[in-house]
Length: 543
Image (cartoon, rainbow, N blue to C red):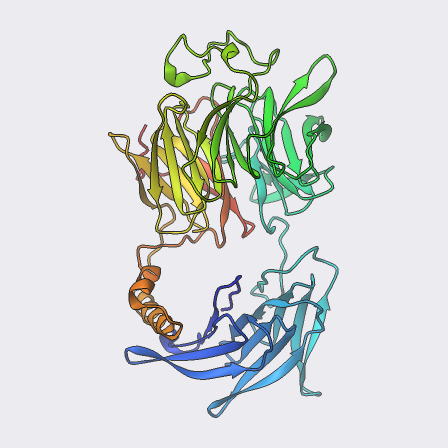
């Protein structure tokens, strides 16, 4: 087992020994430390020193009892245990960038190395020459190779739908199976891929190519069946399906920085774009000129706009920014929004107050200074009476009656920060983020919000908790951490999910028009997975 991550220790267990009593890890430097469990404590028995720079990957073979290490020094070593010593053999990878990850093949006759050189090295042993040889897979990646995985048949397999960093996943509104059967996503490049579910597998049916740089946001309208995309190239496209083809229409956003997020309004007659230019673009269609026009909300944000959310009345727009603030704006556009639509600007004031003409386009209704860190994932409740967003300080904020006399609550998490949230009902929220596991929050009868549980709970074996706790305590003492400070990191109540293996960056409701409660939703993340969740009857959803 090998793991790599920025700034974190990496480790490889000797899986051939009972209960995993020997472990090798890198303490974030150029060494590899091997610890063994004796009775009631862990003791260091070896220190492997050969690399010149930080070790970025370790894997320990089961059958042959060999350790392979890779490093930012662009080399690899295969370590064989001879008597009581570990003897290294250099493997020249022929790389011009750092090696990032490594894994033995199932038969352990070769291993794969991912690198920052956009290259994968397949290394094997030549008996006749008594050395390790590397063969390179070049010109297949456009950026660093962050992980490798062997198929059980001893070959590395690449699946069409197993993409890296799933950006902007959106589902078609016209699903014809139990879950929505068509999905659009960006595979971390300038394209948008559309897949459809046929029988028992997903097949790619369209590739939308118009952007010049990475696509950072996608939204698929429910009523009009239009797809809107935004990109780091500062442009937006609205895609209309004509027969079997998707036809793009350019929307010039007039930005000097990347577009970061996008969302259709509830009536789907306009959409909002957040950007790195501290600007929000409100785009609408002009029938007389047959084009899309963008109006800008400028000079209201002090940093990049990370998320946007429309109020159900189609007028108010909430935003979050890396300046730590959440803001609410008016987006009323004459000729697009109706004054006598019956939707008041301020639903919390009651009927008859806050007519549409009272507030101009771009006027700031509220500014919430609850977080001192980056803010993400703003959402309105189904009624529009509650606003929620997440902070990068592991906090989630709930605000009621925004605009008149706001009542704010904050829920502090003992786990990692959230990236996005979703109201499944008026009193229940699902949050996703760096814990790789959806979290459930509910509001009680008094309106007090609290964390309930992780959605994807897994049981932890007592033995692994015991050894993990003792190992962590030993390492904490070794690197100057106190026992008390370390105990929180090994609590059995901190359950990580099994469906996702990396940060969950997006959560999307799978709800048919007219449904008031979300029982099915999808999540996507940096592990390249799109997971569909369904809340079963055991989870009571408060209305």
